[in-house]
Length: 367
Image 1: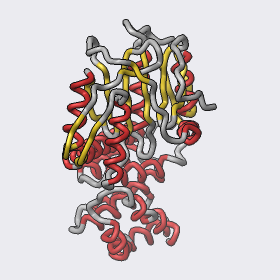
Image 2 (image 1 turned 30 degrees about the vertical axis):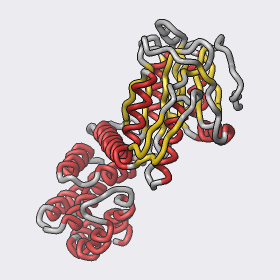
Image 3 (image 1 turned 180 degrees about the vertical axis):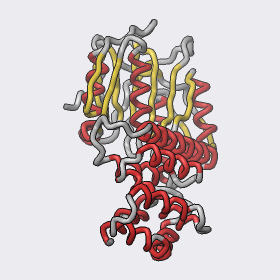
Image 4 (image 1 turned 180 degrees about the horizontal axis):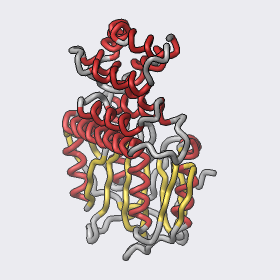
């Protein structure tokens, strides 16, 4: 009977550890004793061979509908789900997982529950759409994280202030972004990542006109910098994206100032693994680079800063490239090869530019 109890109740608290759940982790732990008593006779009948796993799962599901506490309901439902999966009753397991989703249990918990149950299922065995539903839950989790990150970062930009900001003729938008990020981190906010795209024939980026602002919010400083330099900006999750509009005012071009640890940046790119990447003629390098950047930044602990320097004129389409189980570092290399680009690591920044573009001082291609 102990083994069956483990089957029903294992890891219930851990499943909720990364979420903002209702019920809470403490409520789940408190409910375990009551739930074991509720299903005691079911487990005894199952162990005696008087009922099947599917019968035990169905009876557990019914009893879940009769309890009042959400913690007890969740524990009973997750036990029923595990039993349906062990009985290979995949349609009933899928229906039960959808019911738990409709009951608004945290999707992180449901994903963990389902993936643990799916792990021993042979590859290719039909699971009644359960795998597709889990993929949908992953998307839901990613969208929720994106909305939360945008809300938090937007609030930080609106709340935090710079007492004094003064810049000379050599400052670029990257310098402003670096200052803003330092301010957010100093106030206890979360790190955000920067993606900047502009036309460039010489591997440099345009300077900004001198800026003078006192006691300005980060939003006000960003608005002034973008307006004066011809940039547009938008938030996407933990990412801040800048694109220089065509026909923007001409300003002197400056080198990208390298700050930070280039070797550390290269190491992070090599440690980040991607299950699959695909680039083809349906997009240009700036578009594909932005897609790759956002894909990585949407992941819970990943992200990098990127600058894409496209030659003036209409960008050329990519050549088709596909790869599986690849590092982010190698994926950037494949992307650049598909468009006759190369990438360099300049401190914290990953810079993508045409192979024939000049390579000003201040950065190096880090192996």
